[in-house]
Image 1 (tube, helix red, strand yellow):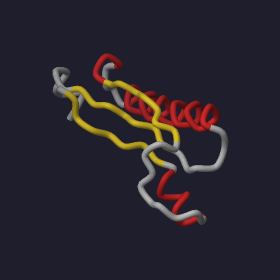
Image 2: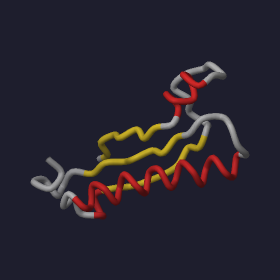
Image 3: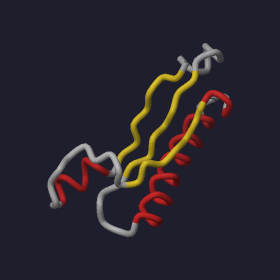
Amino acid sequence: MLSAHPELKVRIEGNCDERGSEQYNLALGQRRADSAKKYLAGLGVKSQQITAISFGAEKPKAQGHDEEAWKQNRRDDVSAQR
């Protein structure tokens, strides 16, 4: 879809679980988002269409303090941009 419509843009938000320092988690979230961006670029999406940012552990999806919650919080969220 993105390759066929170069006017469309997406934002990839890298997230991680609560373990680790704030600095480490922000860097980890950025690496996660950059990896997803690289994957999409490999599929032919222009890099100008993709913004990759990190929220570290600031936006948890699950509130628990166990492996199940941590697994849900280690993720990328992708949203359309205008």
